[in-house]
Image 1 (cartoon, rainbow, N blue to C red):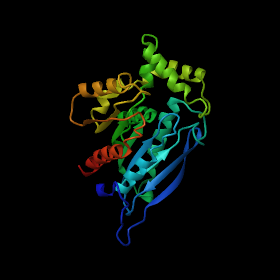
Image 2: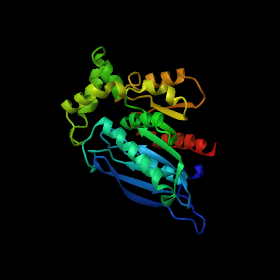
Image 3: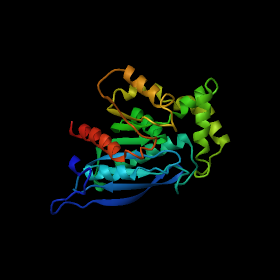
Image 4: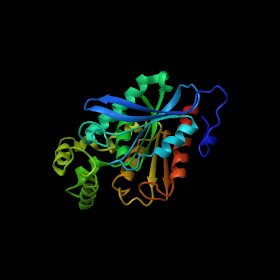
Length: 278
């Protein structure tokens, strides 16, 4: 690991395998899942971070992927079913399945792609934070991860009748993606949430998250996902489970960390490097 390369281009030693970018077409249950794998210099195998973008996916965190690559990680970014050229239709359950499919594919690609299947981590932002929370809690392949301003779609759905703010926030967010995602509509989301909304809630995952190294990152001025509806219930639930594996960090910025990209990269990189190096 090379934290000193977080802010500058690495200088490999003579004979080191070069950095590289590989386009992967991972096959899921609904067809192809486009994935970009960034490799650091050196033969490896390298610890690898799966990065899950949000809804609908304008902010893909490629700057973070490149920063972590410079530090010494392989990084993988991908698109969910029904988004940005991926086959199939978009749904929250499909997002969870797609991320799991990519994670297991990375483990299988292994050293041939310089990936260490025993050092797999995850980072997710917004709806990607929803995805990362579920995978981190449930996937034994993952050794730890960072959850950044997570979208608790399940909590909004469950509370929508008793809490007008939750209902309004849910409607606001879902309406934002209709023009960019295939197979989505108010009717399709309502049907999915009626069937699985409670299972999507993040708080019940707290006991499992408390057993893995988990970094939760908040944005002080997040108006898209108000902290008291999304982040704070999860934070309180994990804290209540005790243990010393949980970390929390907060930056004074908006939901997308537009003014604190370097600070976000450094916070996540230092957390992950600490996990790798023990």
